[in-house]
Picture 1 (cartoon, one colour):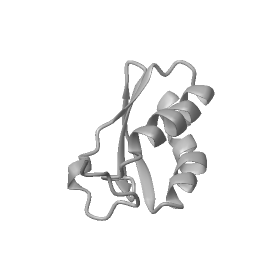
Picture 2 (picture 1 turned 135 degrees about the vertical axis):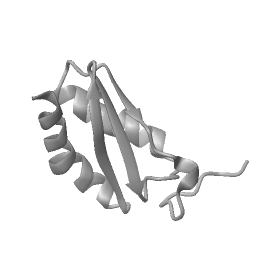
Picture 3 (picture 1 turned 90 degrees about the vertical axis):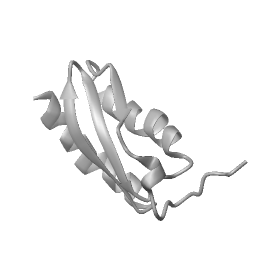
Length: 90
């Protein structure tokens, strides 16, 4: 039930938002009230991904599914080839 609710949020609220930056979010699993996500497209390798995750995605999920303890990004961000925002080398 929790996994289905989170998938619905990703499909209806989260992915439409990150799509504007060429990104997408994939739900990998939910275990012990922890959500595991993989971010792709423009989100992979993006310098703003932590902000998007904590202030956007996690807030939306926790507001709708309060029993969620944490949202973890499992993405290999160094593997991104075309991020929307480039991380600074400084």
